[in-house]
Length: 225
Length: 44
Length: 305
Image (cartoon, rainbow over all chains, first blue to last red; front, side, top):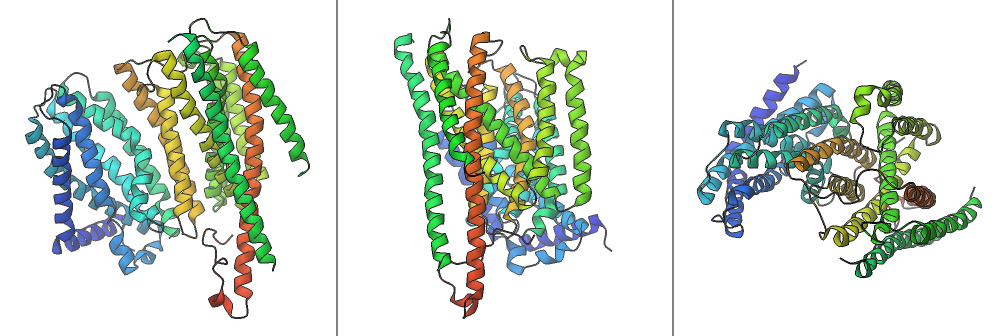
């Protein structure tokens, strides 16, 4: 009887290994992220006085698009090989699978963000006027917020028509408080005008509430496929 | 904005409300008639 | 039961006409806004009705998910009772009483808590098994209709009064927008999902939506304290004559919503019966399922119960 974490780790390392072997999808996602930043750079004047006020929003919208692209492939491999049945054996296995997928997505999306963030700094000549270290918890909590619900809704979308469209359709409305938190916190830190404290707490609350909900209800979703 | 011109917003709001309700009720009626057609086909 | 419908429909029509008369003629003109404020008699009752319907969907969804496990069902009943008791007592506790917005009486909060708890048990009693899911989809659809009206009449009201169509910091309208988005995505999921357990998935989504709403409220609330903006729809207390008309209007719309829900409920039950009949027919055909007509198809949107 393998423990929860051993299943999680095994699934996670398997996914990373497989993804790394054929880097096509990864490279395409990296290039897509780059394109998004460039399009934003052309659409929203980087030289404007107020650019520091809107960059917070731009950055997170760009991250959101990149995240959706990454999330859409979450269950593709499992579907192709019809392995989901094996995980319906026990609730521990189901949640271990979910955590593994969520962590895998977290690493992937963080990778994409790590590429996009410096590009934003370069194109928008960003200087952080507030406490820059606070950007780390904001990035971590914000990314987890998108990824945990995204992985969950990706599973819900498996048996729907227009699967790739269904994911953002379900994810965006529920993510709105998190997006408000991420954007407002980032803007506060960049402009140094307000404290990001409330928003970080908001993001933390959001993450706790929805991680719990996902773990509690994932087995139901898995059984439904 | 003076009250004379703003009254048209009042009418717009009330008309919009009933328009939305009418559209929905219309769709319900359409679904009912389609269902009745299906019931006839099943009965055959 | 069916004969009651036309009678109720006529009564409701009269009630709506009466409410309209009250709203346009009897209610006094507002000192600040003139006659345009009368939009409130359609805007606010629609909002209250929409929220009630979404809440009903939430209750039905939770009970539907719990119906698979009796132990969860029992636990939920106790949780709801506990919440009811808290809701009954808390508003009268001084620390909580201070937090209540102006014009909200502790007794009305307590009564609302009681009504909501009552709703939970009524729904559990009168909507067994699949009926819970039929109620869920009914409440969601009609709720979206009323919510759309709120989102349309809100900006129409704001424009002449505040000069702007939309204020992002307006908690109520923005939170209503998010609620609308969540429930439209709920309806889209139901429409697009081919799983045998679509209903369970939709119920899960409803739970997620419900968890989201308080978070939406707090995030916008804090945003608002940093970026003060006009409150569309006004705050604070209301002229009692206006409140009186508002309640009449709400009663009329509640009756109307009830009739619409009843129709939608019946439609859904009928639709499922027809689907079952078609499936049965295709199975019993001489050549078996392989010779099924294009119309008869095995329904995938219902799990074995």
